Length: 221
Image 1 (cartoon, helix red, strand yellow):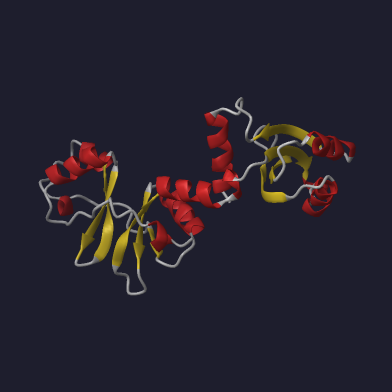
Image 2 (image 1 turned 90 degrees about the vertical axis):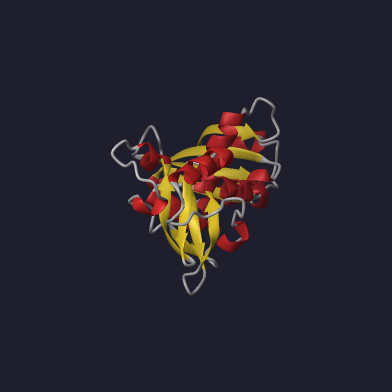
């Protein structure tokens, strides 16, 4: 899915000559803390609540403010992973989308990307999630995949990161296409892999915070 497919047309652009009262009204009505600013079809930056709340910057028009986020832009054909990357680097929750001539097309909100990701990835597929703690030299996705496939299951997606509590180790998060994973866990442990945690995706005890934490791990791909 490309950036242009995720444009949120409910987020309107401001013009430099717009009054600040208009910016504040739109932010309140849309429950947004950031809005794009466009001049003559060109994206020129973002105005955010932090600017509006700065008591030293009390100007009448949007264009009078020192706009931010001028580099928070992607091309229309960029994958939505690029949207996430730019948002993370620039630190904004909206990313402007432009065409090959740098003409403004709209913005993508990170909330829209998260929703699209959840609908179009293995996150929404029934199954289970397994977390494995392992040493750097023990990491072999092919070997782990062989063990899982021997138990008549498949890895739908994987995410490897430094272990949060032990930087000398890795944490491998796997999404499996089976809900019953008792035999898979046993096989992994018999092969010397330490299964640190596991979640059945349809288990009602898997609360909403844990779902969001797992989703955000996937989003860091």
